[in-house]
Image (cartoon, rainbow, N blue to C red; front, side, top):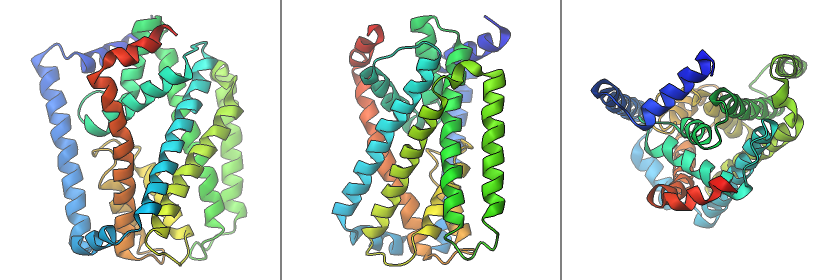
Length: 310
Protein backbone atom coordinates (compact mmCIF):
# COMPACT_ATOMS: atom_id res chain seq x y z
CA UNK A 1 0.00 0.00 0.00
CA UNK A 2 1.03 3.60 -0.55
CA UNK A 3 1.65 5.98 2.33
CA UNK A 4 -1.73 7.60 1.67
CA UNK A 5 -3.53 4.26 1.89
CA UNK A 6 -1.62 3.36 5.06
CA UNK A 7 -2.56 6.67 6.62
CA UNK A 8 -6.25 6.22 5.78
CA UNK A 9 -6.39 2.64 7.06
CA UNK A 10 -4.44 3.43 10.23
CA UNK A 11 -6.59 6.46 11.03
CA UNK A 12 -9.83 4.54 10.53
CA UNK A 13 -8.64 1.51 12.49
CA UNK A 14 -7.53 3.78 15.32
CA UNK A 15 -11.05 5.23 15.48
CA UNK A 16 -12.72 1.81 15.30
CA UNK A 17 -10.43 0.30 17.93
CA UNK A 18 -8.58 3.03 19.87
CA UNK A 19 -5.33 1.46 21.05
CA UNK A 20 -3.96 4.16 23.34
CA UNK A 21 -5.25 6.26 26.19
CA UNK A 22 -4.41 9.34 24.11
CA UNK A 23 -6.65 8.13 21.26
CA UNK A 24 -9.52 7.39 23.66
CA UNK A 25 -9.20 10.82 25.27
CA UNK A 26 -9.25 12.44 21.81
CA UNK A 27 -12.47 10.58 20.91
CA UNK A 28 -14.12 11.80 24.13
CA UNK A 29 -12.82 15.33 23.52
CA UNK A 30 -14.25 15.41 19.97
CA UNK A 31 -17.63 14.31 21.29
CA UNK A 32 -17.67 16.95 24.02
CA UNK A 33 -16.58 19.69 21.59
CA UNK A 34 -19.27 18.83 19.04
CA UNK A 35 -21.97 18.74 21.71
CA UNK A 36 -20.70 22.07 23.08
CA UNK A 37 -20.72 23.73 19.63
CA UNK A 38 -24.24 22.40 18.98
CA UNK A 39 -25.48 23.70 22.36
CA UNK A 40 -23.91 27.15 21.88
CA UNK A 41 -25.32 27.57 18.36
CA UNK A 42 -28.82 26.51 19.45
CA UNK A 43 -28.62 28.80 22.49
CA UNK A 44 -27.78 31.77 20.26
CA UNK A 45 -30.60 30.92 17.85
CA UNK A 46 -33.22 30.51 20.59
CA UNK A 47 -32.20 33.80 22.20
CA UNK A 48 -33.39 35.46 19.00
CA UNK A 49 -36.40 33.21 18.33
CA UNK A 50 -38.46 32.09 21.37
CA UNK A 51 -38.50 28.31 21.74
CA UNK A 52 -42.19 28.50 22.74
CA UNK A 53 -43.06 29.85 19.28
CA UNK A 54 -41.20 27.02 17.57
CA UNK A 55 -42.86 24.50 19.91
CA UNK A 56 -46.27 25.94 18.98
CA UNK A 57 -45.55 25.23 15.31
CA UNK A 58 -44.60 21.65 16.14
CA UNK A 59 -47.73 21.02 18.19
CA UNK A 60 -50.00 22.47 15.51
CA UNK A 61 -48.24 20.87 12.53
CA UNK A 62 -50.20 18.67 10.12
CA UNK A 63 -48.62 15.32 10.91
CA UNK A 64 -49.78 13.71 7.68
CA UNK A 65 -47.60 16.18 5.80
CA UNK A 66 -44.80 15.55 8.28
CA UNK A 67 -45.14 11.84 7.51
CA UNK A 68 -44.92 12.68 3.80
CA UNK A 69 -41.72 14.61 4.54
CA UNK A 70 -40.33 11.60 6.40
CA UNK A 71 -41.16 9.25 3.53
CA UNK A 72 -39.65 11.66 1.00
CA UNK A 73 -36.43 11.83 3.00
CA UNK A 74 -36.34 8.04 3.34
CA UNK A 75 -36.67 7.70 -0.44
CA UNK A 76 -33.76 10.13 -0.83
CA UNK A 77 -31.64 7.87 1.40
CA UNK A 78 -32.54 4.81 -0.67
CA UNK A 79 -31.44 6.66 -3.82
CA UNK A 80 -28.30 7.91 -2.01
CA UNK A 81 -27.21 4.35 -1.32
CA UNK A 82 -27.97 3.50 -4.96
CA UNK A 83 -25.81 6.44 -6.05
CA UNK A 84 -22.90 5.26 -3.91
CA UNK A 85 -23.25 1.81 -5.48
CA UNK A 86 -22.52 3.41 -8.89
CA UNK A 87 -19.13 4.61 -7.67
CA UNK A 88 -18.40 1.26 -6.01
CA UNK A 89 -19.10 -0.46 -9.33
CA UNK A 90 -16.56 1.86 -10.95
CA UNK A 91 -13.83 0.25 -8.83
CA UNK A 92 -15.21 -3.26 -9.41
CA UNK A 93 -16.67 -3.50 -5.93
CA UNK A 94 -19.90 -5.33 -6.72
CA UNK A 95 -21.89 -5.22 -3.52
CA UNK A 96 -25.49 -6.33 -3.40
CA UNK A 97 -27.98 -3.43 -3.29
CA UNK A 98 -29.47 -4.83 -0.08
CA UNK A 99 -26.15 -5.03 1.76
CA UNK A 100 -25.07 -1.61 0.49
CA UNK A 101 -28.30 -0.08 1.80
CA UNK A 102 -27.80 -1.71 5.21
CA UNK A 103 -24.25 -0.38 5.33
CA UNK A 104 -25.51 3.08 4.32
CA UNK A 105 -28.05 3.10 7.17
CA UNK A 106 -25.36 2.04 9.62
CA UNK A 107 -23.20 4.90 8.34
CA UNK A 108 -26.05 7.35 8.99
CA UNK A 109 -26.33 6.06 12.53
CA UNK A 110 -22.62 6.58 13.16
CA UNK A 111 -22.78 10.11 11.73
CA UNK A 112 -25.75 11.17 13.86
CA UNK A 113 -25.44 9.33 17.15
CA UNK A 114 -21.71 8.79 17.54
CA UNK A 115 -20.53 12.37 16.87
CA UNK A 116 -17.08 12.01 18.35
CA UNK A 117 -16.27 8.56 17.07
CA UNK A 118 -15.76 7.08 13.64
CA UNK A 119 -17.93 8.61 10.93
CA UNK A 120 -20.11 6.57 8.62
CA UNK A 121 -17.71 7.05 5.71
CA UNK A 122 -14.76 5.96 7.81
CA UNK A 123 -16.54 2.79 8.86
CA UNK A 124 -17.31 1.92 5.23
CA UNK A 125 -13.64 2.35 4.32
CA UNK A 126 -12.59 0.18 7.26
CA UNK A 127 -15.09 -2.62 6.64
CA UNK A 128 -14.71 -2.82 2.86
CA UNK A 129 -10.91 -2.64 3.02
CA UNK A 130 -10.80 -5.32 5.70
CA UNK A 131 -13.28 -7.64 3.97
CA UNK A 132 -12.42 -7.32 0.28
CA UNK A 133 -8.75 -6.30 0.61
CA UNK A 134 -9.52 -3.42 -1.73
CA UNK A 135 -7.08 -0.50 -1.38
CA UNK A 136 -8.45 1.95 1.16
CA UNK A 137 -7.58 4.82 -1.18
CA UNK A 138 -9.93 3.41 -3.84
CA UNK A 139 -12.83 3.15 -1.41
CA UNK A 140 -12.03 6.61 -0.06
CA UNK A 141 -12.21 8.21 -3.52
CA UNK A 142 -15.41 6.36 -4.40
CA UNK A 143 -17.03 7.81 -1.28
CA UNK A 144 -15.48 11.23 -1.98
CA UNK A 145 -16.94 11.35 -5.50
CA UNK A 146 -20.27 10.27 -4.05
CA UNK A 147 -20.14 13.34 -1.80
CA UNK A 148 -18.98 15.59 -4.65
CA UNK A 149 -21.91 14.46 -6.79
CA UNK A 150 -24.23 15.57 -3.99
CA UNK A 151 -22.58 18.99 -3.87
CA UNK A 152 -22.89 19.28 -7.65
CA UNK A 153 -26.63 18.53 -7.43
CA UNK A 154 -27.09 21.15 -4.71
CA UNK A 155 -25.33 23.70 -6.93
CA UNK A 156 -27.58 22.79 -9.86
CA UNK A 157 -30.77 23.39 -7.86
CA UNK A 158 -29.40 26.58 -6.27
CA UNK A 159 -28.86 28.10 -9.72
CA UNK A 160 -32.51 27.39 -10.57
CA UNK A 161 -33.77 28.89 -7.30
CA UNK A 162 -31.73 32.07 -7.71
CA UNK A 163 -33.88 32.89 -10.74
CA UNK A 164 -37.02 32.69 -8.55
CA UNK A 165 -35.86 35.07 -5.79
CA UNK A 166 -36.04 38.78 -6.69
CA UNK A 167 -33.97 39.75 -3.62
CA UNK A 168 -30.93 38.28 -5.40
CA UNK A 169 -30.17 41.08 -7.83
CA UNK A 170 -27.92 39.23 -10.24
CA UNK A 171 -28.32 38.22 -13.87
CA UNK A 172 -29.07 34.49 -14.11
CA UNK A 173 -26.37 34.16 -16.76
CA UNK A 174 -23.66 34.78 -14.15
CA UNK A 175 -24.39 31.89 -11.74
CA UNK A 176 -25.40 29.68 -14.68
CA UNK A 177 -22.10 30.33 -16.46
CA UNK A 178 -20.15 29.71 -13.26
CA UNK A 179 -22.00 26.43 -12.71
CA UNK A 180 -21.51 25.22 -16.30
CA UNK A 181 -17.81 26.12 -16.38
CA UNK A 182 -17.32 24.63 -12.91
CA UNK A 183 -19.08 21.41 -13.99
CA UNK A 184 -16.86 21.10 -17.08
CA UNK A 185 -13.70 21.62 -15.03
CA UNK A 186 -14.96 19.14 -12.44
CA UNK A 187 -15.57 16.44 -15.06
CA UNK A 188 -12.31 17.08 -16.95
CA UNK A 189 -10.27 16.86 -13.74
CA UNK A 190 -12.09 13.67 -12.75
CA UNK A 191 -11.55 12.17 -16.23
CA UNK A 192 -7.89 13.18 -16.34
CA UNK A 193 -6.79 12.13 -12.86
CA UNK A 194 -9.55 9.75 -11.67
CA UNK A 195 -10.72 8.18 -14.92
CA UNK A 196 -11.73 4.94 -13.21
CA UNK A 197 -14.41 6.79 -11.24
CA UNK A 198 -16.03 8.27 -14.35
CA UNK A 199 -17.36 4.93 -15.64
CA UNK A 200 -20.79 5.65 -14.18
CA UNK A 201 -20.22 9.39 -13.70
CA UNK A 202 -23.33 10.77 -15.42
CA UNK A 203 -25.58 8.04 -14.07
CA UNK A 204 -24.43 8.77 -10.51
CA UNK A 205 -24.94 12.53 -10.91
CA UNK A 206 -28.48 12.03 -12.20
CA UNK A 207 -29.12 9.97 -9.07
CA UNK A 208 -27.64 12.82 -7.03
CA UNK A 209 -30.21 15.18 -8.56
CA UNK A 210 -32.95 12.75 -7.55
CA UNK A 211 -31.59 12.65 -4.00
CA UNK A 212 -31.66 16.42 -3.64
CA UNK A 213 -35.06 16.65 -5.32
CA UNK A 214 -36.62 14.33 -2.74
CA UNK A 215 -34.90 16.17 0.11
CA UNK A 216 -36.18 19.50 -1.21
CA UNK A 217 -39.63 17.88 -1.46
CA UNK A 218 -39.29 16.95 2.20
CA UNK A 219 -38.82 20.64 3.02
CA UNK A 220 -41.83 21.52 0.85
CA UNK A 221 -44.00 18.99 2.73
CA UNK A 222 -42.92 20.39 6.11
CA UNK A 223 -43.88 23.87 4.91
CA UNK A 224 -47.27 22.70 3.62
CA UNK A 225 -47.81 21.05 7.00
CA UNK A 226 -47.53 24.54 8.50
CA UNK A 227 -50.39 25.78 6.33
CA UNK A 228 -47.83 27.74 4.33
CA UNK A 229 -49.10 29.84 1.40
CA UNK A 230 -46.18 32.14 0.62
CA UNK A 231 -43.10 31.71 -1.62
CA UNK A 232 -41.21 28.46 -1.14
CA UNK A 233 -38.02 29.48 -2.94
CA UNK A 234 -36.33 31.50 -0.11
CA UNK A 235 -36.80 28.60 2.32
CA UNK A 236 -35.61 26.02 -0.20
CA UNK A 237 -32.53 28.08 -1.08
CA UNK A 238 -31.77 28.59 2.61
CA UNK A 239 -32.06 24.85 3.18
CA UNK A 240 -29.58 24.11 0.37
CA UNK A 241 -27.13 26.74 1.63
CA UNK A 242 -27.39 25.27 5.14
CA UNK A 243 -26.68 21.83 3.64
CA UNK A 244 -23.41 23.19 2.26
CA UNK A 245 -22.58 24.62 5.70
CA UNK A 246 -23.01 21.22 7.40
CA UNK A 247 -20.08 19.85 5.38
CA UNK A 248 -17.90 21.19 8.21
CA UNK A 249 -18.33 18.50 10.92
CA UNK A 250 -18.35 20.75 13.98
CA UNK A 251 -21.75 19.86 15.45
CA UNK A 252 -23.88 16.81 16.13
CA UNK A 253 -25.41 15.82 12.78
CA UNK A 254 -25.44 19.44 11.61
CA UNK A 255 -27.79 20.53 14.42
CA UNK A 256 -27.38 24.19 15.26
CA UNK A 257 -25.56 24.93 12.00
CA UNK A 258 -28.70 24.76 9.85
CA UNK A 259 -30.67 26.86 12.33
CA UNK A 260 -27.89 29.46 12.46
CA UNK A 261 -27.72 29.70 8.66
CA UNK A 262 -31.51 30.02 8.37
CA UNK A 263 -31.60 32.70 11.07
CA UNK A 264 -28.90 34.75 9.33
CA UNK A 265 -30.65 34.44 5.97
CA UNK A 266 -33.90 35.88 7.39
CA UNK A 267 -32.00 39.18 7.21
CA UNK A 268 -31.67 38.74 3.45
CA UNK A 269 -34.81 36.89 2.36
CA UNK A 270 -38.45 37.50 3.36
CA UNK A 271 -38.85 34.55 5.73
CA UNK A 272 -40.76 34.10 8.97
CA UNK A 273 -38.13 33.77 11.72
CA UNK A 274 -40.03 31.17 13.70
CA UNK A 275 -40.62 29.05 10.61
CA UNK A 276 -36.98 29.52 9.58
CA UNK A 277 -35.93 27.87 12.87
CA UNK A 278 -38.70 25.25 12.93
CA UNK A 279 -37.90 24.04 9.42
CA UNK A 280 -34.27 22.91 9.91
CA UNK A 281 -35.13 21.53 13.36
CA UNK A 282 -37.91 19.39 11.88
CA UNK A 283 -35.64 18.24 9.07
CA UNK A 284 -32.99 17.26 11.62
CA UNK A 285 -35.43 15.10 13.58
CA UNK A 286 -36.72 13.47 10.40
CA UNK A 287 -33.11 12.67 9.48
CA UNK A 288 -32.51 11.35 12.98
CA UNK A 289 -35.54 9.02 12.80
CA UNK A 290 -34.24 7.51 9.56
CA UNK A 291 -30.71 7.24 11.00
CA UNK A 292 -32.07 5.28 13.96
CA UNK A 293 -32.84 2.39 11.61
CA UNK A 294 -29.09 1.85 11.46
CA UNK A 295 -28.93 0.93 15.16
CA UNK A 296 -30.45 -2.44 14.24
CA UNK A 297 -27.17 -3.42 12.55
CA UNK A 298 -25.21 -2.34 15.61
CA UNK A 299 -27.33 -4.56 17.85
CA UNK A 300 -27.40 -7.39 15.30
CA UNK A 301 -24.16 -7.19 13.30
CA UNK A 302 -24.79 -10.69 11.94
CA UNK A 303 -27.58 -9.24 9.78
CA UNK A 304 -25.08 -6.86 8.20
CA UNK A 305 -22.31 -9.44 7.87
CA UNK A 306 -24.54 -11.83 5.90
CA UNK A 307 -24.31 -9.50 2.94
CA UNK A 308 -20.53 -9.34 2.92
CA UNK A 309 -20.17 -12.50 0.87
CA UNK A 310 -23.00 -11.70 -1.58
